[in-house]
Image (cartoon, rainbow over all chains, first blue to last red; front, top):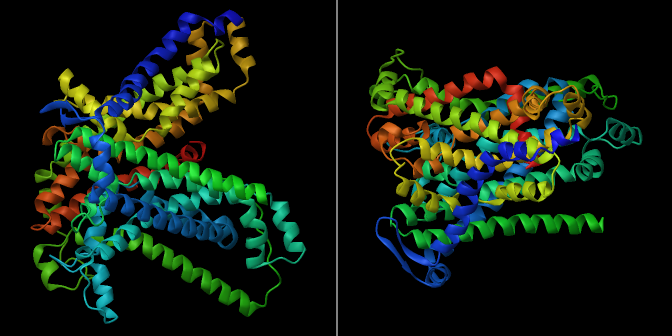
Length: 294
Length: 290
């Protein structure tokens, strides 16, 4: 019977389709992209070898600097909000609502499955000033603040972007962290209570240290997802005004398909890849070090 | 989700208990308003006509429930066509990914041969590749192969993208199945294909369902790949269609745009209402393990 499970022909039949598609769609294009980044041009216009000029351009291009900084700012601010709000919601589910949390959990999670494009267009209307004044500006008007043209300034647009993506993802992080909180043995919490720990102290001394692994996992997942932001901003305001809220991803897309410069687009894609890897490594290492100290 | 016994709190007085409950209710109300009001607003507004928008206060209910916005959205936005495209792309990709992905995971995890663990690592490494990195070469490939005038580029790209996570998770699920089951089946005369289709797959069906959902939502909601390979309006997916629709009518007719967004949101609501508990478990499972 051993021989059945190590039947070579069967291994090939099972493995070949997936491996062929994987190599064709992921592995070959990754290498090809690396090659592209040393060329200039597009499939329609033809390619010329450009040496390191794309990378030199990457270094000096003010738009790259701006979009890179924006991407990092967006990822850090959003991630902080996602973890804090997600954690607060998870604590709320766990210690306040307890068994009756299912309905609230279900409702708060719903935006997670919505298409980012639809959510972005919805938020565009919520914060709109023209052609119709949206609900947010109407509420502000009630408390005496004049209508704010959210999308006219980089700061305003950034605020809307953070609100939108937080609204869309808070339920996700809440459920993720809630699952982590459920893994804390009930006896540990019970005995801490018996010893007189209550409320905030219980959360700070017992729950937070014990839920650290899931928080780290959420941060690693989040940093990768947030650094890749694309669709929600494209549909909300297309990175405006100007390029003030354009993330690297959107800039890469525009470079390649609007300005037809595949080589430079590939170089920007390389930058995005390095950024994601750096983010992951950074979180990983700092979490290790802190665990080591504790 | 595991259930646990309600934990007791320190003995509080009745008053403290009451104000605590009020606070809880206020918090619940606040959370629900933030989550639900935007959806409620877009739904009611989608029935308003141009007059209602300009002359009535924003929170007023529509004067009469007119469906003309929906008709306009459906006809000019071509939601029927884009929804059909999205459905074809999503379902075909999903089924193929699940089939070839779990077959590969079976070969890599259950079957015994040299080099299987390094190939598993090689495939899982794909989880680190961002989509942007593969788009441009893929565009060239599809262009050269003359595939750009069809939905095939989308389907192939989604399959390639979904494989690393699928192989990884399916391998984890197969690892949990006792190997003796396969050996017993083989002893009873089952061939390797029966071992896979009649023993392996049924045992990991929960995992397949979970992954299927994860894939469904990520492909259905995707914009980046769909926009890159979109050649013409009749091949647009629902997300691309919605984006173009807003570009076309953003300034002019608000009603139809709101109706289009509503259609898409409430279609998802129906799917979600049917399987929400499993959706939550599935979507979060993919992220922690991946």
